[in-house]
Amino acid sequence: MQPLVIAIDGPSGVGKSSTSRGVAQQLGLAYLDTGSMYRAIAIGCQAGGILQDRDGVIGFAMRADLALGTDPASPTIALNGVDVTDEIHLPAVSADVSIVATNQEVRDILTAQMREIIDQSGGIVVEGRDITTVVYPQAQVRVLLVANQAVRMARRQAQIDGQLTSDELKDQVLRRDRDDGTVSNFETPAAGVTLIDSTDMSLDEVITAIIALVPSGTDAGDQVTSNL
Image (cartoon, rainbow, N blue to C red; front, side):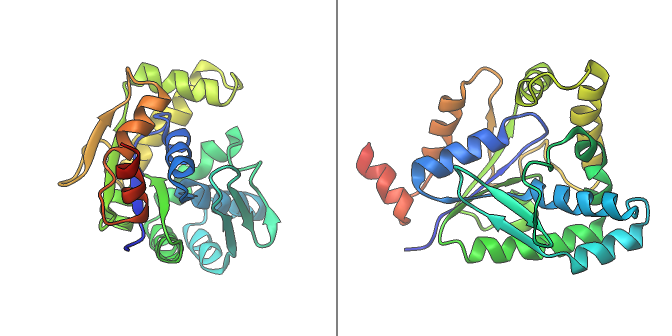
């Protein structure tokens, strides 16, 4: 049977990570947070003082050794042999990650790595900005997850346990979406992509809605069908 790939896109604070990990755990699939790859590169560029050097960032991304653990219960990422799992969501990284993510050459480098991980996974849930359209449009399940601005802001604030001021939160959610939107469309679903508005849905409801999209003809699809 063809390994199942579920691609989930959406703006900041919509709940992509919690949803994707939940779906992966329920279906016994691997999990890939593509945003963590951009964040890891940002960490390395910050440390090297080259974040504002476009060519330097590209060169660093070409040389960087990214190692990702795809267990949805405990995803990890290491940069050049150093575990940066606990660092990737620090406010300072969130503030600068768009510099990396809007560099098209870096996107091309990391997209190739993402595809390799997906192809070797044996079944995976992948989340990001342009997974459904650029990275892996052939995924059997493609979802654009959205929610209204107020809900997204509240969810992100809860995720970071109130560590940011209101202005910092707006920068992390709204400014990043605006910047990233210059290189990726994650507001409007492409043809064949299912739009799920999670504004008034619980996490369990969103997970259930995505699992319901899984077709037969995959291990996970047959598992879903047998459980109905």
